Image 1: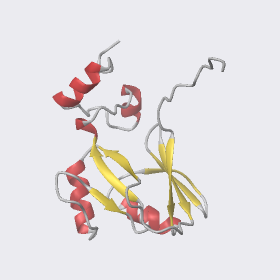
Image 2 (image 1 turned 45 degrees about the vertical axis):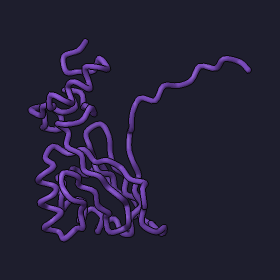
Image 3 (image 1 turned 30 degrees about the vertical axis):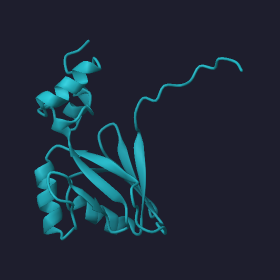
Length: 152
């Protein structure tokens, strides 16, 4: 067998979630996060995340997810918990915030400050989030990989 060069995975461009109704989904997600709409049609909506996006697709028919989930990174995790509680959404106990949307998509809320996931400074600036800083533990994780803020 020939030695074939493989492509390197670089990151995520988007995630697609199936929902029952686009307008209801936009209202639900807009209840706990502020977002800009990248585009919308009768069957699809695109929630902008700077250089990434969430695609909402009308037509979910499968039962709720068990373990399949995605982690949504936010700048203010406690604010999301408060909003979801006010919305009456069933949440996991603190410090985690795991829940299902009305269509059964399992979502995990993750605070930007404490994880190794990093947006480029120009992307954060464009999103109006240039003041976000990482915790010492997150910087330590990034430093191990040569990816800490300021690494060249």
